[in-house]
Length: 234
Image (tube, rainbow, N blue to C red):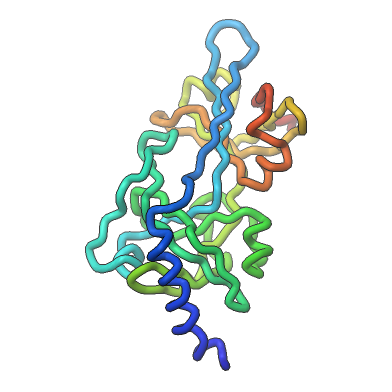
């Protein structure tokens, strides 16, 4: 049977799975706070594990969940403007490989994007580039299936570049600016150093590092005793 002929059958199977998992699954998270050892102002450093997730336009939400559908809040994320929704979708890669239960983060954006870890990409059969969020030109696409419909995302499936969000006060403390680089030192059972985190600044942001599940697992982040940000050497 050709891929075109198989698609309706695959979508039907996935839709049945989604109906059972519509409000199931855990959202991204897993903070690991640590205080900076320097005297005076002490930034509240939080390291969050960014599990596989996606961002959608309202147009794509309409296709996947029905015309006029609005995402519903499961929980607020560390950055006050963002939330993990109750809604999930399935991602289908080449050779009909699928990852169900991929959570949608809200609110809706001007572009749709799927963020996966390296092992997710292997599972789907995709060769994903490491990209900053929003830098999706020339990236792979995938079939996205929701309870009410499906769409072929032409591009926008990426491995998100590890990064740190911070407001101006924290940027001044570390002596960095927007798009600078920092290293994350992790002390614990699996101590290690993640190099070249991209600095992203916004007056409304709280200090937060985002790494994916592969990186967090390699460092055994949940059992880390201390985490520190260090300005990367040039």
